[in-house]
Image (cartoon, rainbow, N blue to C red; front, side, top):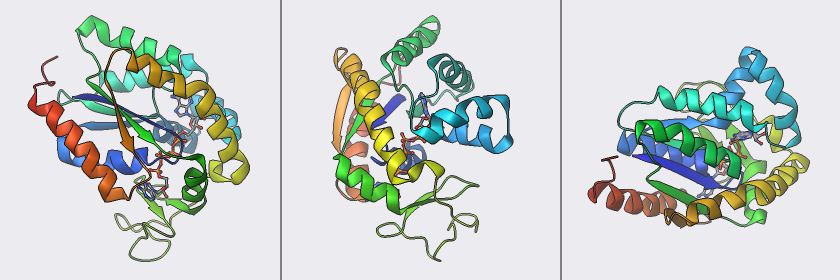
Amino acid sequence: MRIVLLGAPGAGKGTQCKRIVGRYGLQHLSSGDILRQERAEGSELGKKAQGYMDSGGLVPDDIIVEMMVGAIRKAPAAGFILDGFPRTVNQAAELDKALAPANQKIHAVLNLLIDDQVVVERMSGRRSCPQCGAVYHVGNLKPKVEGICDQDGSKLVQRQDDSREVVANRLKTYHEQTEPVVDYYKNNGMVYDVDASKGVDEVSAMIFETLDSLASVGSRES
Ligand code: AP5
């Protein structure tokens, strides 16, 4: 299966992707995680992306499309789930163009719906593992030992772009530039809305129900 996961910053895309990949054997391709990795390595790409990320704006389409299409080409036959890409209508069109020569398409777009106020609360409490990318929340998704990753024992950190001011900018960017991507896919009848304000397990259950039904009607074929 080839899936796109859309939703505002903090809607729970990363959290749900970790669960989806475990169940369906898909590769998790997160544009944000790849960019943060590039920054941590001090690569040219990471340096170019830095200013846009820190201000809550979008990294230019040409940089992102090249990076993500490269990652998609290396994905296993079982498929992938895209997290944070595409984020503009132009990126969505470029993704379609990149898949077309291999006769491939996106099977489903999961659209996580959430209010801005909930996003602000989630972002202020988010803590992440800089090593494995595991995501926690100081209130509702605590690690077993405070401040330490359950998976690999690393010290958890707060993301640089989770300050109140930058979150407000990320939400503005999302409403202006990424919401139109939902309409792009709605025109092709492949969008499944998910109420992302529910608890993590409930959201996963709704997503699994959708993906199970897609898998059972044979969407793996093309
Ligand atoms: P990116 O890393 O993609 O950030 P984002 O889309 O803003 O999403 P987040 O990772 O912040 O949130 P999430 O939805 O994954 O939520 P999470 O699961 O962590 O992008 C960062 C930057 O990179 C962008 O601003 C941009 O500059 C650049 N970039 C990336 N892709 C790009 C592209 N395609 N084009 C151009 N630029 C690009 O959950 C959040 C918190 O809530 C956690 O603490 C979690 O524990 C908690 N939580 C999750 N689900 C629930 C729940 N159901 N109930 C209660 N708490 C929950």
